[in-house]
Length: 204
Image 1 (tube, rainbow, N blue to C red):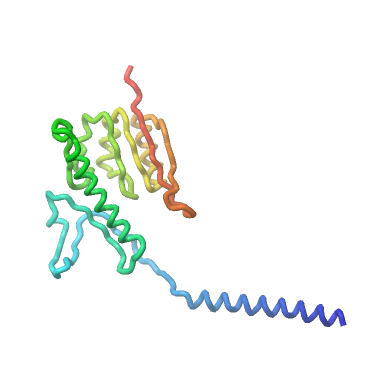
Image 2 (cartoon, rainbow, N blue to C red):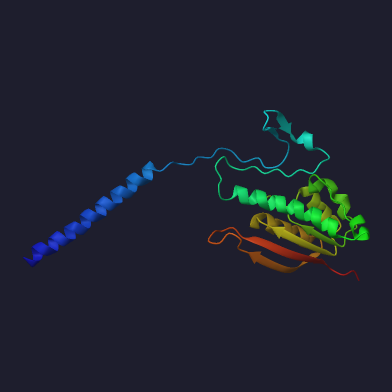
């Protein structure tokens, strides 16, 4: 009798395990699969369609401030918040300059366009603050920083691989890594941003 009950219990467990495994397999096959092709082209010239149907290219904004945000067709959580952040950043820049005194405001300049096109602006700078996109510093800007290292450089990196390459180049150019702080802005993910402070070795 006990043996029969034991066999029934074991058989029930085995049947449940088989049914559960089958359900998982069928459910996995029913899930939509995401396929990617090629590599996303970020940066450079673009051609878009305006809200009135007209063609809009990067040439329309030459000589003007431009902040382009590419969102998803369905993005209810992240995209609206990021647009608000971008609007607040531009508003903060304008208010920050307006709050300066006349002399300090006269010493500030906003240069539109890619950072690599304005390397001459950092030639005589004592302090440089750089917050590049995920691809890292533009080659022209990195080369300029290595050719004429500033007294201090604050570098924000949202790509560990790009940040590591830049640290190696900057250290080889004579800058010392004085401080490095990681930030987990996206908890429970592998994404980590870093803020690094470089200092130029004093001349003897």
